[in-house]
Length: 442
Ligand code: PLP
Image (tube, rainbow, N blue to C red; front, side, top):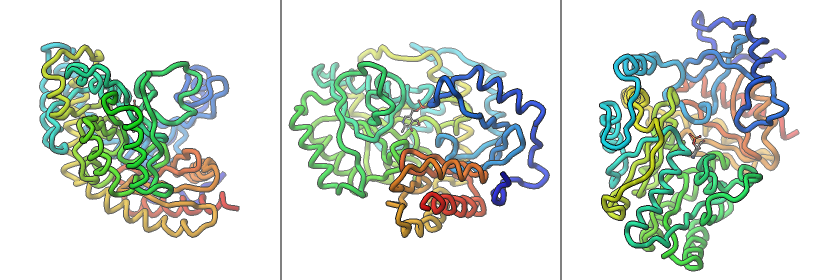
């Protein structure tokens, strides 16, 4: 099917890589035979799109087709694809010291420098860093640490974790237990106990008064003295790109503080510029007790995450032993890449760029709200979503046939390109999204 013209700026002249049609069919066949892809059917795999190269907001597959990356993969790539300095940072560190464990009293220079730098960038009150390999592990860490902190403070009965319907915190034991999306939880038997769900914080359906009243009522029902922490994403990501009402977070924080409940902010998607600030906590004016990051920390060039831990948690733990860790925590190669990635984010002022280009895309998409089958067009920075009154899968497949990657999450369309997307590419994204949203209305 001929594409409706290839995304502008997606085939930058002579730098457009050639396809490798000779291997494309063989790889597709092998992939289907050998790989169980995350979040897909095990028995009957789809035809894979096999990516081969990337540059900025553009990817090419092995057949040589170009794609404008309208979701930044899984939000992991704020600095865009194909940055040579990140490859160099990794190679240099591997040549010097590829890895040694950070357990106990062993350490390495890149992770020390990264921890110090993260704490300088982070919202006030965060004082220490626990490194991880990714987001789920970060949330496992935060949940365990919240419970352990209360345990050591003489309140072992404070085990309940408050989470929200529509929230996504990962696929491991505790992080899945705190994920409020039923289809992801079914079939696995009992999950981590003592996780309680509140309603989805969606400004379209609830105002802050109602959401805060619900929180207060649940705390009263459960008993504050049983609750360890509240975990939430500043803006729901997998749950449909849903920002809460603007005053939601400060008011939630006030209720939690009053009840000695720790606030764990899952900034795995939002940290490192996506909402126009280094951290969404700044955007919403809050000071969480723990901030969990991953993805944008290394722009996904290598897996790494970091849990930033605040003073209140440290005071509760009071120097106790933390029996927790994964082999590759504090990986020097990940930390070296993260440092180089932060250099790019700073040098190119990408948080500010996210705000500007996010506003441009939002302006372009706003007229869609007039269509009968569109319920809402919404977003903060470069976290944008469109909610339909029907399944959005047709928008995802139609856009992809035109060379644009956006993701359908139920009735929602997820739009979150790399922060380096150019204005021309942003305009192409808008044009193609508008075309395919309109098409599914017929
Ligand atoms: N938390 C949020 C908000 C996420 O979006 C994700 C992944 O998309 C995770 C946690 C899980 O991170 P990971 O897939 O790196 O384990």
